[in-house]
Length: 550
Image 1 (tube, rainbow, N blue to C red):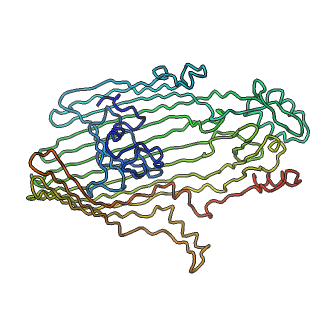
Image 2 (image 1 turned 90 degrees about the vertical axis):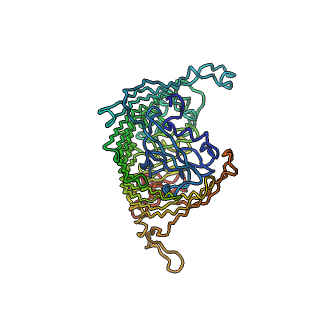
Image 3 (image 1 turned 180 degrees about the vertical axis):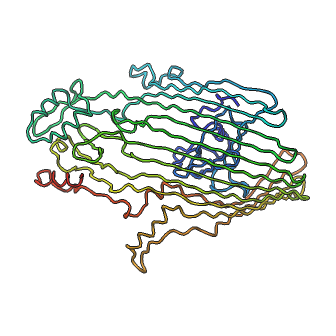
């Protein structure tokens, strides 16, 4: 498979699923990572690398990216799949990494997307714009594989570097006072010099006036502030595989994938508030395949994956406050002053897994049964408006240090949510070949997943119980998650040109952690809201605002 076969960013061979019937892009179907399978949300998909869990449990989707040049096989199972597979009801994606052989082999590759390769949009051309905004993406890498001990021990490796640079412009123009406007404001009495100085420090003066806003009856000239912002992502991917044929009956397979992404968080409106955002992902798997006899084989796998993402806040200070808030001046400046309004936050996911599958062929039956156990340790922290969010209709109200009149809210407390839980899956399956052209599949799967540790704190809401009407309790894990599977495959006649398939199956989707982190009891975090009904001429408005900020 060439690296230029599938251009989708960080999806690799998974994009091949779009060639299958019943598969569509996720647009309009629901949030999540990956395509929509059979009309389901992308969050209902399950991703694996050589049978090892590769799912993020915070928002769903794959954890590590496996480059195309390191991919040997790609499989998508949908609708009707064996009870060996579960975790989710959507598509079952599985990637197999390349192995070394008795011959040393390797490759060098580059996949390139560039603004100069693309045609100019006709709408832009009609307005006299004949160049594309910056979009420069390279995917450069090299592979090598071969024998360590001929016929016994093999290695394979892939190193890939992907720099991506894009243009970054605000969704709508930002207005600011001109130099003359700032000078006029500095000489006015009755304004908060603290608020004005913060505005002057972070919002550059407009070069020329195109509009104006009124402050205390004086027209202040404003204009568009040009924003020249960095926007880049640098990703490094390392893949290493080892294969050991210990004997005719035992084979060992080891796989390691490492993704390191260094990006800039450009969610904030003004570039001065941008910050670095490091993201690291790992996956390791070790498998042992044993043949007891020609009819009985066993597969034992150990897997570990980790995801670590951090969204920091730049170290800026707002005089008198313990952290820099987000301040909106909406109607006349169209400004959001402050860092990424979702920061700070972090997510760490650790998944430990052990799987055992056994195959037994007897007569017309092929039995397969096994178990899958997973331990997940997943702390994360995200609190909405942890630094405060204060929205004003106009510049005047902000400079007078009055209460916000659009929104004023800050969360108190930044608790850590723990998504720690244990999952265990068991299954048995029989492929029964009644006739050469007729097979029946009978299977049963059982799943048990504990409630994430952080969600058990819902029991603290019992203080608000209304007996006989509304009661709050700790969620209980279901112990009845049985999932039967029945399938039929029939080829009429002897030609083998026609295949008829039918089946029935049940599956249980997982609940991703973002549902739990947004529903912690109020004992962990609460909000303080500014009274938006206070009139602008209320003498206590500014004092009330300051008290709630501090």
